[in-house]
Image (cartoon, rainbow, N blue to C red):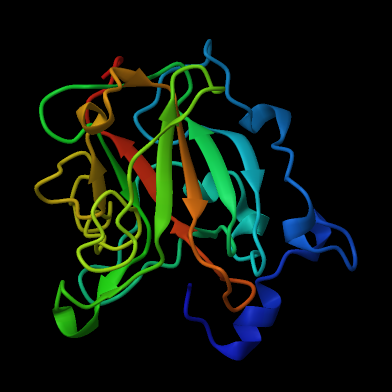
Length: 228
């Protein structure tokens, strides 16, 4: 959830995206043709297309800036502050993204990193301000393999959305360096997958405050890419 002043909460909802009176959770958002994933597109090491997006209850924040708001590297807020350059999925919302003609491949260490806008209360990593997401990957966009997510108690291994985001172009911290970037790293070897073109994130919340309920996606960076 993005913390905003009340007047910005109202302004950040994008009613034009759904039509008057519609509930974002009622239907999937059809990506613009230019945002759809195409294997013949130039390869990217960050999100460059949206395969599918089904907002959950309380979504809305960041939708007026789709798809660019989740493209490129993250704009992390550091250990004690969450970034605001994010897309809120809503409670139970789900998004599937790709990287043009690129694939994540199993290599040394983490293969990709997901950046939400988590931060640590008082700078203590054991007290994260979190919004957890279940992560799954696919090579063909049809069959997905899920990373087991220990969502019940800290540490929330296998989940996205609980580690602070350090990477930010303004600070010079690269999102492709697992040792420095922060965020939630994932290793394809952990689920027996050798390569993946698509990443799906499903919010695990059951409720939240509109328009910023649920998992807040900032960016995804491929560490081990088929096309560096």
